[in-house]
Length: 115
Image (cartoon, rainbow, N blue to C red):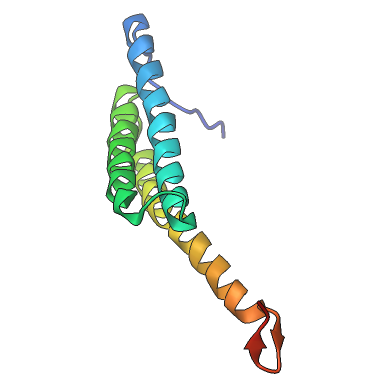
C-alpha cells in the first residue's frame, strides 16, 4: 500500500509572504532566547524579561500565520503549538538545572563554600 502525502499547491504570489513570515519566526525566536538568556545571566536587568515574552508571543503568532499560509493539516498545527509551549519553558528549565547543579557540585571546604 502506497502512502501519499497531500500538500496543496501554493500560489506563486504567496512565496514572498511565506518567506517573510518564516523569517519573522526565526527573528522573534532569537529575540526571545537572547532577552531571556541575557536577563537570567545578569547582563541586562530582569525588568526586560517581559519584552522577551513579547518576542515569544510574536513568534507564536508568526508560526501560526506560517502554518495557515502553507495550509498545514490539523495534526501539524497541534505539533507546532506544543513545540511553541516547550520553547517557552526550555530556557527556564535550562537555567534552573544549571543553578541546581552549581549548588550541588559547588566546591566546599569543611561545609563552607570556597571563595
